[in-house]
Image: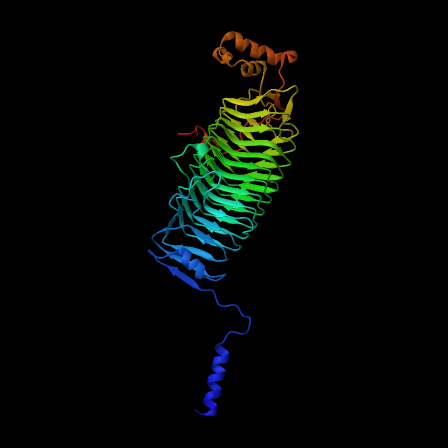
Length: 425
């Protein structure tokens, strides 16, 4: 071989070789039915993709390095009702397009379809179906997780208290839970001791609480729907929340619970056909505006010193009982724009859209009814109706109430009729 050819061959080899210290290009590993996903993960390097073809894979998976586990044609991974199906113990892991099923049922061990261990920051779980697991996704002590577009449905053969939660977020920062559908678990989304979370576009039904949310401040609940469950959104021991454009309908107990909550904005939500539309307990310095509260047995149950809240521009329509409130003094709502009350019996002589006389939600009869439930048998009797009339004419007999000096003559929400009569099946 001539010297020129030798030099050319050496030069080509040098150009083809990776420079010292350069990372190898990511590899795509393909797993087919009958092969082992776990074996492919062990062979893969950080940053690789393990692509799983359609089929059923009966194994429990541990991911201990940054990689992407991706399904093609929705392959199913079954743990055979033992332990976790997938356990993640590394940062920057992505799971996409998988059916994850058949975890164990040990509540003490927190068996889950996908268990994200502490320190596994940057997890991405998308377009996965998590079925017949105890917990759907368990996320603990991690940052920057995104859980999006997943279907989570639990063990319908277990009693509610024996099930796990659909998505569990504990001691996590900057979590995003987006566009998931959750059913037949204990609580749809359970959150505790976390920070700066976003919950948007989720749909939850047939659970105990749609959300069980505690000790997690500076967060947003937006565009979620909870229906036909025991309770809708339960937001407790929190501050600085934004709760907007959510829908809670047909829930046995409450639509939205605001318990021990401060400095939050609750706006443009729809609560329809629940036992209680809003349950407000020990809540102060919040703003409630633009909400439609319609067709509930009780529109608002207000208790435990819940005052100093700005409640304005809301609609309270065809609730069997608009407000349940027992206290020592009036609470004034509607200080600027006024709320609409479907049972307001006042008039508007100056035609400014606001009633000319005070609206009061409760009277002596309402208070007696709450203290003595059997009184409801006599509510339509002439004696009780006379007592109601007299109590409203003479201030000395008047019970403390939620009052509105600017009651609206027409609803704010022009589409309120589409929610009239919405109830659980």
